[in-house]
Length: 460
Image 1 (spheres, rainbow, N blue to C red):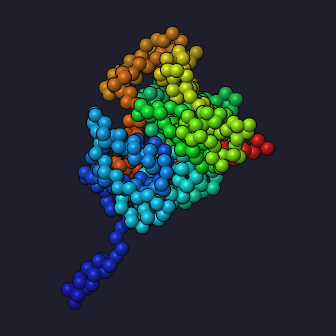
Image 2: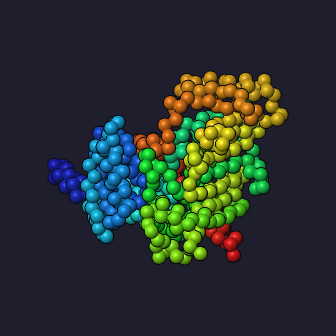
Image 3: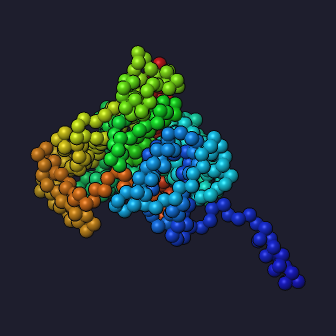
């Protein structure tokens, strides 16, 4: 009788459906990438460096067009470069049914999404529903409708035991890393100030350019990149990086609840104006597509790429702004500035003409703090940092102390994509993604999409 019961148990176990997501061990080649509808060069940058966990065969599903052609050309350039060439084997399916084909075949276990943002949230939801992990470029949501869809995707990912994560490269910039460390030392930084909506305690500004070089070549933007109905407005795009950095630095490893901890106090948006000549230089197109006619006035394209958001997070007042120009001045590029005010010191990242358009990290003591005490605590923190970094502090011409970090720690924006990938793949193995990551991703996209609603109402 016991023998019969044992056989029945074996049969029942064999009939059970297999888990949708096999266990990852960190073994070489076990992560099989699917690149879905690549529409942004960030999809390719995730493959700029080969990681041992990745299978060299990559599945690509996309509609025909210049976007997938540009993606494959960039991958090919990585394979054929002289120094540290990659050896990706891209298996490509081109067709209008690319999404259905991908979902039916399921030839991989991680979907990479850096695509047209109008469809991205839907791609995320369907990929998760199919039991696949997703690593998505920002933004994962560009309006209230897609935000609610993203909420559904995270809920479903939890049920399916798969991971959904966005690509936040700025956490891997050495200046941001050291900035975060400085803030953790209460004797040096104190507590973060609360500020006011008129004078926020935390202020970040990011300036970007439509025309730029990537991997040494002019970046060709897809036509839809200039349609805010497809790309999303600036207020919901680059702002995701800024909000992520603010919460990561100011509230490290803290779960944020957007229903309780967040209050938006103001938001506005405005357009960047592009001539047809600018548009052509950026896209190689000779005319505006029909879907942009709604945004063209007197032969000038108005792109709502700029925005400001003021909000409170746990009573701390924050102000962020994103500006898009067409092309940077000679010798300059995308720039970033940051001010975070503490009760004992304030920390700055500046990247203007005085810094030679290269970002530099500074710390400034509060008026009530003595120079002797400030320098004592600063030296103590720098000594601790020297265990991991070639770093020092020196008095700058502006009266602040510059935190001088060796260039060997500055690997550049494009290299940060591999760091994000490594982190995500580590989560797949450990199944221990920090519990604050998901609620804080949702908080981030709540802020951006709610701010867009407010900015639009201000127009009326």
